[in-house]
Amino acid sequence: MAQDEVFNEPLVLERLAALRKKTGLTQKMVETRLNWRQGSLYDYEKARLKISLEATWQLLQLYGARFDELFQEDPKMDSHILGSLMGPLAQLGMVSQHMQDLIQRMRQDPILIAEVGIENMQGSLPVLHLLLEKLTEVQRREYFIELCRYVNSMIAVDHTIKVEEKKVRDVLLQYAAMDFDEREKLSLLRAFETQYFGKGIDKKFPKEALKHLLIWILFIVSLSDGDINHLELSYIEAVGENIEFKKSSYDYIKNKIMQQPR
Image (cartoon, rainbow, N blue to C red; front, side, top):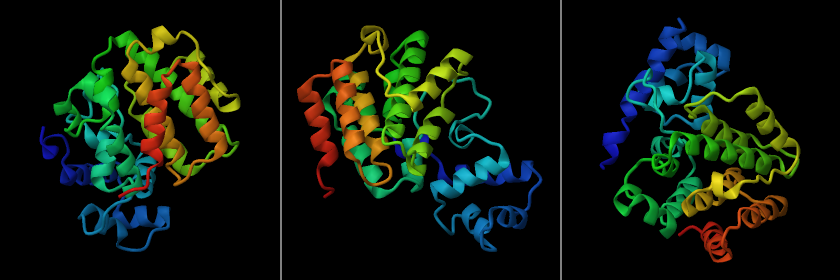
């Protein structure tokens, strides 16, 4: 699948401008509220400057909009396929080159390739999207909630929730085509307070590739601020043991993550 078949940068920028107009805000009003320099929003909307993740996040919060409104074909479409916005964000240049490199290494994982097919992996659809597409609706929900619990616990494990980590987590949650019930919301909050280690491995990880994706995502989120500390690394190792992840697979991912960019 060609990249421009699933992503249209001019359309995304057009939608950002449409969201602004829908709220009744002028470019000058937005710049004043966000304390931006005069003319900056014009430059973003006209693609004269590459818009950053931070700037896009601020605009969407100001407009009361969601990330998926920028990327899906029809903002009103009821999608049952969950996904990550990492692919489109990387294409927009909102994700650093380092993060793009890590995502590319993940897409070379032989277990992930075997599950979704090399043709799909060479396309632009996010890996999370490709994997969840193969699950039942119940399995998608079970796995996605479990993934969110582990991510919440990981970003809080060093008692410092960094802005970069939280944004990656929030993008993941923003794109979930589901509403969490009160019990699920509480479990997500508790994962911030204590290290989460779930149960029911067979039920929540019906495919080996789902374990691979979890470990990749934990590493990528932990490195979203450019570094990984020993508390984060220890937690990811413990998660691997808890989900009965093969040591050879863990070592493969860790080595790929830690290798210096070319």
